[in-house]
Length: 262
Image (cartoon, rainbow, N blue to C red; front, top):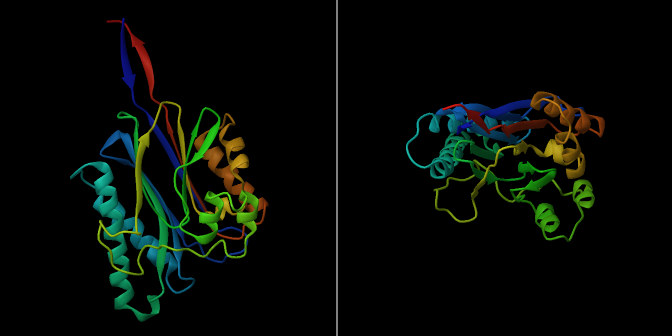
């Protein structure tokens, strides 16, 4: 008998306009990357109202996808470079068209590699990345906002942060100024393990302003498909107000050891 590792990465993305907005300025990436065991995942939330938030989000999505199309370095370095590339593409577009002068976005992007059991991520703003493992939901990113900083420091409870009148004021964004990869106070990035059975959630604040982490964990604990879980999370956010666009990307490391006869 011999043990053979079978790598399977499942993923799904959904976005919804919500109950209060007329247009959807969120977008997402959810695609295989270089091999069936890897995926490029991202949630992008456009900023700038009718003056280009959706345009900034689309530029970021397309720029990251284009930059990551072929492997040309380690995944985390590439991901950092991709977000800087997207930032500078948005900034160039802002300068070309005065009507888009206020546009920018916030985003979280990740490369999930279930064969290597690794997760690489880059983050700017108040979109979020969570890992769900053994019935525990862990937030892997920190919000770049005054309210988010206070919540992470336990100065505000989760519910107080969700209801705070300044919860949508961000301290960092993608696009408002040109950046380099090594600029301080722009990108947060990280690398962690991705074990068999782990699930990932990337989402915009349209979800986390409406739905608590306990409610998210309760949905992810249900024996539903990823698509059904994503639909349920969006339904909950809308049921509880739906004040903003809601975007959810879910991925699952379904790797397992298969016993084969030698």
